[in-house]
Length: 200
Image: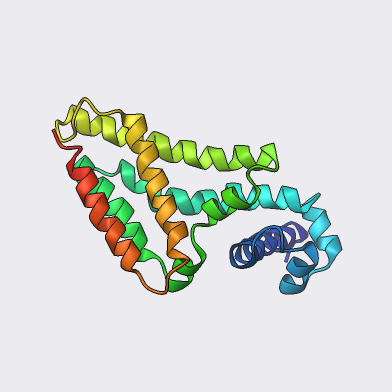
């Protein structure tokens, strides 16, 4: 195996295993030593690819967390079809797709926001980029719905987008407190009620 390819595989291993550890145990409590023990790599291998845990954290957010949000919550919003139906199917469908592990551990992005976003501007920027991309996709879909007369033209696209993101992230955090999905079922009922109010 060429050295360059081996180096890329090592970096990918560090990135993926770090995400798993951050998600399971939290960013602050996961040390570089713990990451190296999990990956069976040396500290030299770590510092060859990353100057610090902070740099690694930013890449985990930008490469892995952002892709999870994009694949699950952003890309579906650009599909063809009725805007309100797309909103409901994207939000409720995503909740239904989560494994028990995901439900017990919440949203990785939201976990990062709650744990470290107020400590470093670099973390803020990386996390805010995900929120802004998600917000933009929602605004785009809402505006399309207005043009197609399936959404009330008097509503604020930005206000609805922020509300939908906040409610979704909130229930994902709250779900960590419970042993069953009843609160998710109530959220989805509330989502349907809310979206019905957006009709013309």
